[in-house]
Length: 298
Image (tube, rainbow, N blue to C red; front, top):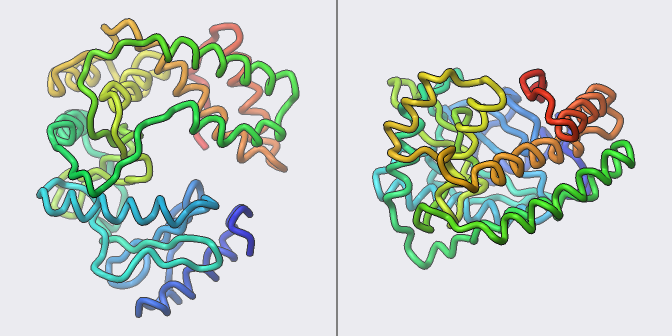
């Protein structure tokens, strides 16, 4: 299998079986939880296995495991990497093994999301972690080939809009200090464990950068998508202690997140009529300032 190829359930199970054999786990009863940016399985013994689809998966997986072990040492509530030799590389894919926090996925209330982000931002990472600096437009540029899956006119709009935002971003002055960030902080990445305690998950985008990046998605989900109520958002702001929507650069980061969400979906559009239609709808709303409240989840 080529590491550049999209994982199917069948190919992911093949990779999982090989990796589990190497570390001494049993994979025959593995349950597929998610097949997206990663393939995620639950396997016997309260273990979660994640298989990265990224062609440069090994370096990212090494960093995720190192970050998880650092956070554990700090007593910070995040998903825990199991004490096995990992990541395991199979055919160019990187497989990591994690403690299963709970049998079902329950999202934490927004108060806990804000508290965990605030506590994360109070940490100081050791230099040996060698965390990458947030480079948002390099992240988008790495996915530009996915625009081949959509209408050429829509693709051109996205390219031009990215160029405009990159220029605006270069001129921003951030208010919050530069430091450790989760990189994809939102209610979907804070879940409750078996005892009902919130934990931060998905350390793929962990790095250093302006702290505003960890606040913008909650604001966006409230202001443009209606996924949070006003009361929930006010609670988030009160607990964290800063309202990113009061900062003049918020629209730039919010526009970036919308484009990133749309470009991610372009990667799923090859041979997927529903994804193609959703991209077309999203681009139309980005062009004319229409509602985002009908954007469908994928």
